Structures are given as C-alpha cells and as structure tokens.
Length: 144
Image 1 (cartoon, one colour):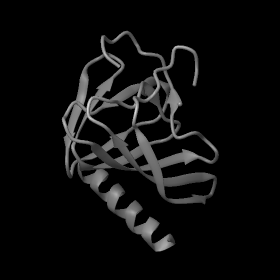
Image 2 (cartoon, helix red, strand yellow):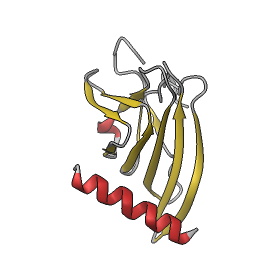
Image 3 (cartoon, helix red, strand yellow):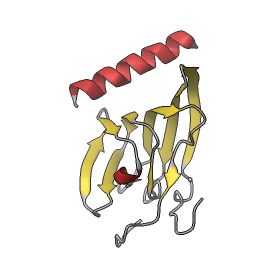
Image 4 (cartoon, helix red, strand yellow):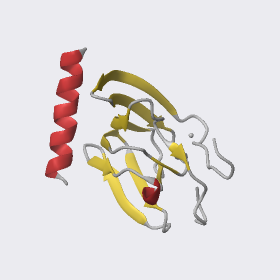
C-alpha cells in the first residue's frame, strides 16, 4: 500500500507541477455524489489521502474550500470548475490535471455539466485531522 501511495503521490504531483461538508447556508454535494478512499497515510503532521470521487451528470460538489492543497486527475468525463466570482476557472477533460489551492479565500464548486459520470482521483494534502472540505455558502451565483 505504501508503494502504491508513493507512486500515486509522485504521478499526481509531477503532473500538477508540469501543468502548473455542514454550516448554515452551506451548499451540500448533489445527490449521488460518492467518494471512496484509495490510500491514506500521515507524515509529520500532514495527512495524504487519495480518493476516487464520482459525480453524476447534472450534479456538483457544493461550494467549499480546503485546508490544504489538492491535486487531481480527471479519469472520466469533464469537470467544470467555478470560483467565488461565479466565473469558470477551468474545464478539465479526461486525462487533465487540476490543482486547488487552500484556504477560505479559494471557495469553489466542481460541476458535472456533461451526460456521463465524472470520475476524479484526488490527492488531499491536509493538516492532520482536517476534514476533506469545509462547506461554504453559495457566494451569490445563479447556480450551485
């Protein structure tokens, strides 16, 4: 398992370098959004967790931010990513990588606007014990 995690970490971090959820008002993930842990370890107070996330057509993650950076790969489908200004900050197709910065000043939502399930593999690099995401209210966008 340690070798698989190291391989996954190396691959995701290399790709990212090359291409360089329950409070009031929060927007929960849409129905049918699922996640499963593929690998997990803690090193020097940092949790490294690799998850597979599946978002059905027409659904999204809900508005949120993270307490540490995330590195992802689109395994299937297309991820439409929006920032707190309600503008698209990226459309990521199968094979694309994405990096999400940390902190409450980086509120965002991921949506599947396609007609096939969106599958992501995401590496979370978080302070030990931090949640995968911190819910945030919709910043006033007409969607999400």
